[in-house]
Every structure is written in C-alpha cells, then in structure tokens.
Image (tube, rainbow, N blue to C red; front, side):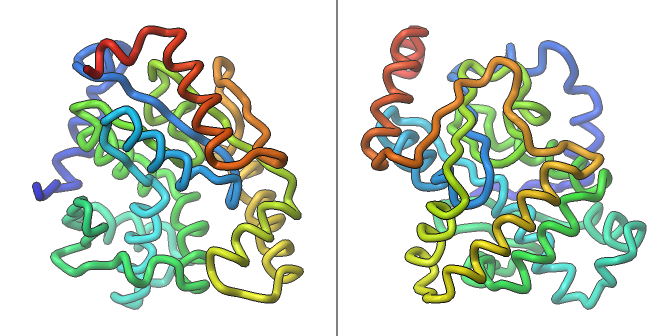
Length: 242
C-alpha cells in the first residue's frame, strides 16, 4: 500500500495535459453516472472480469469530506476546505481509503458524509487535488468510476461508459444496499443530488461526448457487464491487458 502525498500530486497534475494517458501501459476504462445507477457494482465486477485495478473516485471525495468533518472544518468555507485538503495524506488499497493513516471506509456511507461529499466535490481546489491522486492510482491501468472520470480525470480513456437508470429504480437499489425502508426519502435525496451534480460550475455530471450510454433500468448486473465486455472486446483492449 503506497502513500500518496496529495500536495506533490497536485503539482504534477498541472503538468498532466494532452498526452498524459499515452504513458499508461494498460487500458483506462471509465464509468460515469448518477447515484444508484450501478457504477460501483459494475466497475468492481468489470475490473475483476478483465484483470484491472478498480478505482472508486467517490470514495476519495467521501474520505476528504469525512476528514473535514473530523477536523471540524467549516464545509461552507471553500478556502478553509481547500487549504486543509492540500495537506492530506491519502492511502488506497483493497482495505479501503485511509486519510492521514486513519481508515475512513467504514464511515463513508453515513448520510452526513454523503451530504458533505457533495459540498466539497463542488470546490475547484479539492477537485484539482484529487484529479492528481486518481491519475497516480491508475498508472497500471484501471476501471475507474465516478461522475467526471471520462470528462475530466481521464479525457483520453480507452473506453468510456455512462451508466444511467430511472430515479425510482436507483432509489430502490440504494434502499436495498443501505438496508433502508424509506425509499421515498431516498428518491428525494437522489433527485436533489442529481440536480446539484448536473448544475455545479466545476465538472458537472454529464456523459462524455464519446461515451457509450447504457440505461441499466431493465438490466441485471450481468447484462451490464456483458454489454461492456462486448464494447471492450470490439476495441481489442483485452489483448493489451493479457
């Protein structure tokens, strides 16, 4: 498990323009989409199927949000959040995300952290920092999922997917995942998050121009993976992985 100093990566990410991804030896596959569309399940399953690493970008933003709350940083103060984020140490491994040596993964799905992550994700300074972190983690190829992975983080990715589903279906999936029965409340939360993500000034949620859009509303996870594998196979990427 390698430590990543975010401040150094922030400086390096400013240099990562144009042909940044050409240095990667293995493919970069991105999956973007709104909450509850099935990004995490699909990305993990796809990564395991083809033998690439898995990157959950949302977990990084949640980890930063958790740390800001732990330090009692005023989330409404953009300058304070960005300054605090610049000095963090982030660790990523199969065990989860650590911030300054503390495992944050067990707390990342708390409702308070979910709300806070949407706040900090709108700050340009936080996004600049975490873009560098994500690019470093993807050095050996990766299946990465999030909301701006194909549009901002890896604009030259080999294959880009945009996974969507009807809001009601996404709310039901989240309710099952989180063992909650208040589906109507989750639906309102999801629609509010959609609105924030799609209308934020920095890196709004939208499909990349060259993304393959998949509506997972009527599909099983296996169906989604089969569709993705077909697209990947058509591009000859499996030979590069093997």
